[in-house]
Image (cartoon, rainbow, N blue to C red; front, top):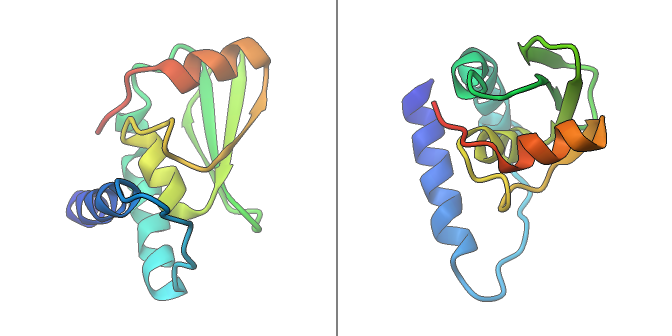
Length: 114
């Protein structure tokens, strides 16, 4: 799971470092295993988050609680974007943060990694 995420994240790092890059359609044959890997690694990735975190796969009802907490932020995005977010590349990830505004701001600035 970690190797897959490392490969996908570094691939996106290279893509997004190019001028004029744009989002791409990720086939289900990649998105599905990335979602599984995100679910397996999210607790470790969000261990330093100060508030609760839930991840939701965009366009589905599939979600996982990465960390419990009184305040909860739901991060919604496609699996590759969620992988980027939880790897500490919050600014590069195209996700939506739902929940308390202050908690969302703390999560967006948190030091995250596997």
